[in-house]
Image (cartoon, rainbow, N blue to C red; front, side, top):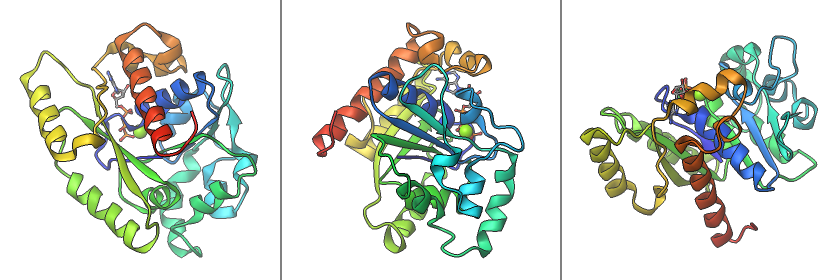
Amino acid sequence: MCVANQKGGVGKTTTTVNLAVALALHGNRVLVVDLDPQGNASTGLSVPHHAGIPDVYDCLIDNVPLAEVAQAVDGIPNLWCVPATIDLAGAEIELVSVVARESRLSRAINGHPEKFDYVLIDCPPSLGLLTVNALVAAQEVLIPIQCEYYALEGLNQLINNINLVRQHLNPTLDVSTILLTMYDRRTRLADAVEQDVRNHFGEKVLQAVIPRNVRVSEAPSYGQSVMTYDPGSRGATSYFEAAQEIAERGVKMGGVA
Ligand SMILES: Nc1ncnc2c1ncn2[C@@H]1O[C@H](COP(=O)(O)OP(=O)(O)OP(=O)(O)O)[C@@H](O)[C@H]1O
Ligand SMILES: [Mg+2]
């Protein structure tokens, strides 16, 4: 599942990290691929990603097997993370001249000898070759949408890019899931955005909505997800609900629980 939205700061990384932890805590084997040179997902999962650590760049550019760079996440059984270091900042340009530049990540994931129940790819806030690699590798796209005024602006561009990838590179790619993030129930605006998104995307929108919750934003500074930092917080329970919906949909689509 590729977590994408070229708009910055909409909750892509927070969603990737917390869904991954929630799914792993329920016994699923989960892999997070940090595909953003900012390395926020690696930080959020407390996975070392300083310069010199083998990372997703090595898989994309130098064909290093994914299994050699994936690290077990401390304290969460069944969860692994392929980190991003600052090296990845150059990949967007270096990829331009490599063979099969759009399908490097797909090849790396498919070459992994062990199977995962879920692979979540955290995308950078752009529509460049890194995001294209994520879209080619994924079966499904999850789009987090922040409940703010400009939320829907730019979504057409993302959907157009997804359609292009579907036409040329990954015919079965499905925008399966929309998640509303940073919902502030005190504002009428958040409610209006929610209605808009539900009218437009229908069933794809998860019932669970992630509230704006300070515990969610505090958790990364402790190298934790909100699931472990404060499991009783509204942020954590909402991400648990979202993970449960995703798991139930997977079962309906013929997967296993
Ligand atoms: N539900 C929430 N409540 C409060 N703060 C949140 C919530 N979700 C995310 N945040 C905060 O909002 C900021 C942006 O979130 P995040 O990094 O997940 O977005 P992103 O889409 O990955 O950003 P980027 O485009 O830079 O990769 C972070 O500081 C995060 O801690
Ligand atoms: Mg991010």
